Image 1 (spheres, rainbow, N blue to C red):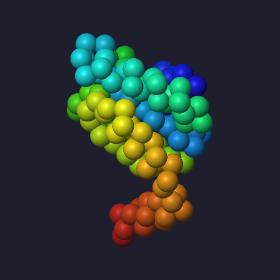
Image 2: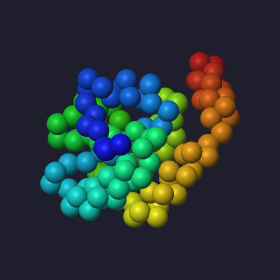
Image 3: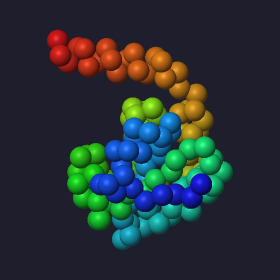
Length: 124
């Protein structure tokens, strides 16, 4: 599957509906973003079972602000609707492969339990 463009219209749906969603926040003027783009696209081709999306921070300012993007590129990964990874900076192919393997290997029952415990603690 090729990388898809994420916008205000489809971002929340993809977070909720896709089992694993990688999101690359980028801008056309960003050199490191341009360097990371071929690596990200190659990973999207190599892992058709994962949704790889991109958000142009210049065009999708609301999503970028809501996500707290301060540096680009920034990679976020959602699994079963939960943010499980976030890191600014362009990753080399081997590091992106490690992130993919790590996300695939997560025990999501444990992750959901931790999220529920954190939400309960907040409500106090």
